[in-house]
Length: 86
Image 1: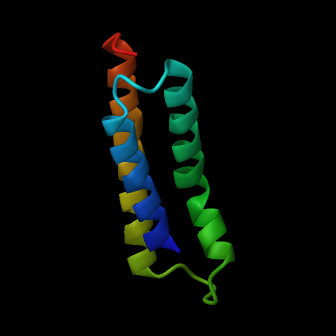
Image 2 (image 1 turned 120 degrees about the vertical axis):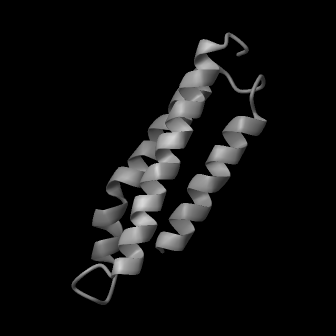
Image 3 (image 1 turned 90 degrees about the horizontal axis):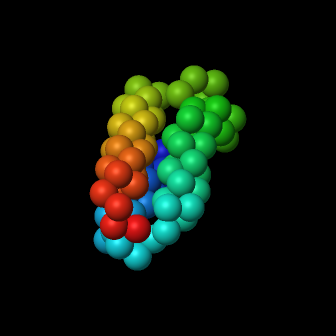
């Protein structure tokens, strides 16, 4: 499940950057919010849906990577909002 999270956040990052000039400020803010929710709630949700009682070190690395990608999404959106291209 953590690999799917990384794939989804990577897709969102790419979508946001390809959508530069097309997406409205409100749309970008919604996307940023949704990506943030996914990244921050992932440990709880993934942990509840694993057979093991503890999250593996590989999953922890995936969650850290997901948090980093989410941060890049937020930074990219903030940059776009400051550029007045939307």
